[in-house]
Image 1 (cartoon, rainbow, N blue to C red):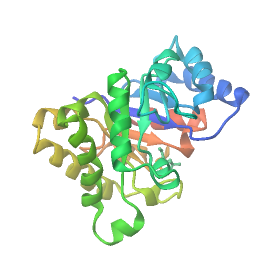
Image 2: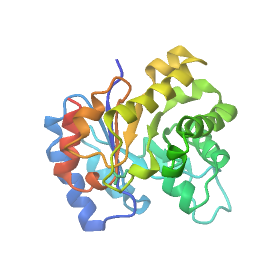
Image 3: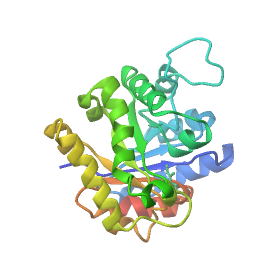
Image 4: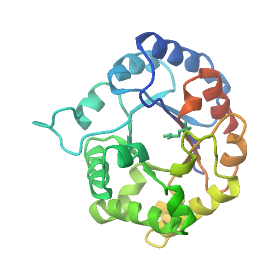
Length: 250
Ligand code: 13P
């Protein structure tokens, strides 16, 4: 049985005061969450504060990125060791905003995946197609290519150390969620592709859905056989909404 996971990607939102309030609100509602592993990924500067507040709870903390290198002259980057030092257990890797706005290639994303693993941080590895790619019928090819970059560098077994988040780019922040059938179809493809290389890894691997998931649609999405939880953007910024998604996995 795969334990469901609900992770909040806070993106570049919040302040010292608001993150304090948000994590306190999530903590206060954790009693109602019986199944899901709950993770929050604040902006890097707020990780120590949030990790401190979450320390005596079941809530885990992740970063929104991780440097592919471990130390030295990499201005603006944050290493796996540093993230670990301030309490991160997870790191989002290859988010479509990083790929599209900051030019992260499949190869760089794979190197970041490797950096997370060697520092004992679990990657939340994001993949997904743009609207144009979906409309031209290449959704599966795009997802396969993004996964293959990690497999080429680290081997298929490496996927067991993290989770995959399927986030169709056209569904992110748009209010346009993939239908449960659309999402399930891609999740099944991803699992099948990995199963062809290693059935055990595929069977144990959690594949999250991300893209306008909210309290209203979470239950049906997470209810699909190959959808093991969600990576939540906008709806993770309000404790009540985020908790409603976490409990949808109960
Ligand atoms: P939204 O939930 O705001 O669509 O964002 C999804 C996302 O990008 C999570 O990483």
